Amino acid sequence: HKSASSTGGGEGGGAGGDVSASNKKRALKHERQSHRRHADSVVAAKEVWNRLRLKTNTREETRELTDELMELLRGKFAEVAMQHDASRVVQAVVQYGTPEQRLDVVKELANADVAGSGKSNSTNSIAELCKIQYAHFVVLKIIKYCFKEAECVRIVVKSLKGQVPKLAVHAVGARVVELLFSTFPPKSTALLKLELYGPQFALFASGDLSNVTSNHPTLVKIIEQQPEKRDVALEHVINILNKGMEKSLFGFAYFQQLFAEYVTVAPPNDVHAIAPSVVDHSIHMLSTRPGTRVIAECATYGTPKDRKRIMKSLKGYTRSSLTHKDAYLALLRLIDVTDDTVAVNKSVLAELQVNPDTKDEEGISPILDLATSDTGSKMFLLLLSRSDEIRRRYFDPSELEVLRSGATIKEGGEDVPTSKKNPETRRMELLQYIKSLLIELCKNHADELLRSTPGSRVLREVYASFPSQALADAIVGACQQSVGSEGDELSIFEDRTGQLAMKHLLLDEAEQNTDVDNAESISFASCLLSRFSGKLSMIAASNRGCFVLVSMLKVDGVKKDVIKEVKKSEAEIKKRAGNGKMKAGCEALLKALNES
Picture 1 (cartoon, one colour):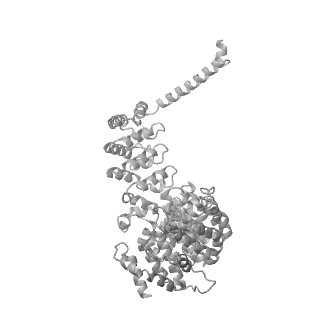
Picture 2 (tube, one colour):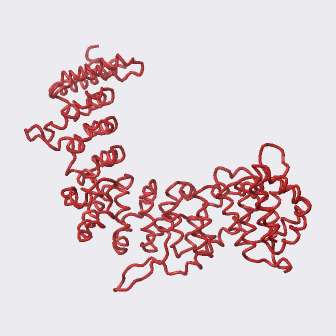
Picture 3 (cartoon, rainbow, N blue to C red):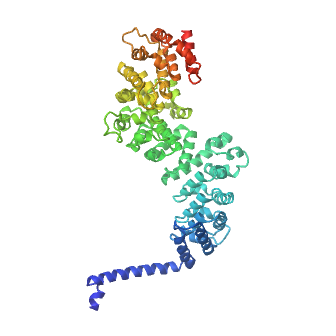
């Protein structure tokens, strides 16, 4: 029986052997840990920590447990912070401790001999902790919980001085740099950020760069103040970027910010050279505005192959990118400069043909959500903009800077455009791919578009680009259904956005001087008049409706008929002009009648 048990011959013997093996392993682990420095203190601290992290603790219990941890670990914080099983104990002191206790921890860590030099009061001990896998979590906690305490901030910044370029490209330290720049007050980290542009800028920041460091230092500002150091700064930054790309730091916001500053200052040929190293990581860069700018510049100055690689990286993310507050701009730039419109259609526009969220619902356009989105609608507006004037109408200066035309690089001493195809030809080819989708959208969802600011812009430009009687009927039909409809919803003429949309449609026609006598012409104003003939007084019954009628009076083809009908209600309109809410609209309409 003894022999069978020792060899694990029985079922019970096997289980006993397993338990024995696990016990031996556990005992060996405890023995190994007992030989570490401060083993007894760490064991006791971990027991306290297990009680401290309970959510049921009262404020008084938390304070007592934190005090106990402080007594156990005082003088040992740095060494304990580097241990994989005890680092979280130091983190707990920072998280639950008082401002005074946090300051004590920070001071001790800042003066510790982390590098093993045998000297205390090391000036970069916290910087060394930032590079250690488990210890860096303690530094992250300090940044998170001490950013409002000026003395802690001062000590941390002083300890990191001169170390930021190394930490910025360190696999572990990069996490600390990320949280540091996003959490600490910008003014306190300005000198640290200057180190990313070159040590000389941080060293002499008190001189010529004092104005720059008082706010938010950028590469552009640095070069503006010291243009003679442009090449030195660019070389230092590109070295950091190259090391960062080797470590795949594309997802870090500070890295994207530094990259964006570089591509907006560097010569086009340098951006052209670095683009192949970036484009495969496009989806990771689009999380921030600076990262989006990087991809947009790579699309601008990159090769056709680079642009196809960007499209490949974004495959499956077209819809989500267009509705993202930053990412949409890179996608707009990509389709704006890519000559291969067939590839753009297959990789980008094809994804718009089906909306996964509404594919089971009949009658809903797959691009309705995009058309009524502030950012998603801009792709349609980009393709529908027939002139620079229209483009300036819908895009702000920062967007227009990215969507600029005429990008070139140097080849053989000559300026060579990065896009060969005529921009208008490229625009028309891309527009043809989504023409039917846009027209169906406007026909089936005129009411939703008229009541949405982005949607009304898309509707306006679709009608201007592809006017048709069916589309005019759909828009006027939506207005007709909204008048006198049940519920609290205002009619299109009374709706703030809808009224402006109607005004713009009418004023666009007035500018074109459409000849309604021409049988081939399509007049939106005539369609509106025919549907509301004898009912214009209903439109004039609201302040905003009066402004719509003022716009109708500017269309030559319907002017006489509108005047004739509105004149019948002139007395009523004059009466309403005395009403404070109706005064502006009624007075504008009466003035237009008198001038006509």
